[in-house]
Image (cartoon, rainbow, N blue to C red; front, top):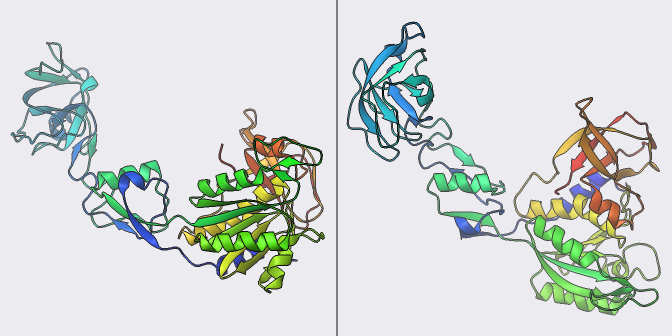
Length: 412
């Protein structure tokens, strides 16, 4: 039986990157950069003030103290976006706002709260002189040109997800259009004679189809586009028909839930085995052992378990990395921390993913983790309450309270 890492590697090795498309920056948030972006100019593009205050030559206030304040003459009032008209000479300063271009001769900025005058300061009134009672070194409270991003340097690498901050960075660099990976089109089908659509009454032996909605949400969160193939009865013919629909609709990856284990109604596995395109169908993990990987008409196929929690965790371990890899993003693993378990935990020796709550213990200053509820693979309530997956390594059957485990942090 394959390990989780081996199964994931074999899946990723069979996948091809999707094509790129060019979008306006306003439409590119959350997408994956297809090409590196180099800074067309420096950020900041010019030296500017980091404070509201007074541009000064630091040497003029080197001897300033509370006992012997230095009086400096104000020769100009410079606002953001204005070009200074004056050059500072000994004993002079220019009032300046945050972000404004420094005048020639200035090498520091005195914050306005460090200054005193005989007249009240206001936006409308610039005092003729100020008193400074403490020194400051050259460069203080100045944003040097290129101190954030030097000109021609790598601003964002290919494969970076365009977060809000990344979008802001590109806008600050004047970049209005970017090449991003196209959204991976993922066909989703849920099999099972017991499934009924939302809104339909539940009769004896029937359950609502939740996996299609869960998987579509996970696909969207990973940056893909879900193609809903609906509920599929436990019939090889029905599965074949829906798979043909997936290919016709341009699916680049097919994800199913249920039908991949050893039962007589596990028709998804039976369907793919007819074409001899099953690469593996079991992984040494808990929950989610029955995971199938193969292909249908050249489209990669990932069959997940039918139990809802197993489907979610198998998606996290295999489908999410697959989607991100196809989009050119190498970083698929969730943010991880080490957490100290609050109670004993058991496993059967498979690599186990415990639905957990990870929180800061204010007394110890460490992260503490405890199960978020029952760990059976049908318990969506515990999964919905979890903010992390605790990973018990393969071969470990018992974890004692107080031991450290790696935890993947889940989005809230």
